[in-house]
Image (tube, rainbow, N blue to C red; front, side, top):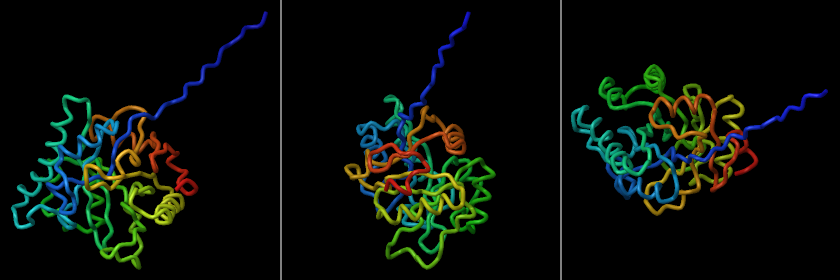
Length: 253
């Protein structure tokens, strides 16, 4: 007598969309809206959460660089907390990050750090990229190179991105040209790095909202969960509003 077995294949769903690259006018001089307004925009668009990555002090910051270090650090944290508090009773998760300008117009998205980390590293914005990367990684953080092949007046495109200090590459940035994103995807593939997607949004009614981000199988609620999911590669990317494999952007952008 034969025994019949039913094979059940579980298809993991990636339904929790997080914005991984966005700005607020509290800390980014080029942004137009408050932390609460940006959180509301992403919540209304159906995102499960967001990481605020305001321009750090070496970049296009709205924070007074003449302030004492603790005051500057707390200003960045306050922007995050304002958005976090807005979303707290709505089930909308807000996490803290930074976009750090490390030289020649090149920037790195920084995840998995907190206020204690900032307070423990005075003048972090003046660290060399090697030392910045070491400090972030020692604290359990994660680095993704933002838009490495963007062409803009402030970027020295003759200098290659210093990818050796990164965990990932932002292979889809909504405001990049398709070819710039393809070059980023090729770089990530060649170097065996993980990938991220971000809207790089600076305004509450921007076109990137709903069309970029990372899709997780479970909603990360804190820095540790976010970094764990990223390091495990357990996610998909949102590119132009479509869910794609994190390794497929060479063909899809």
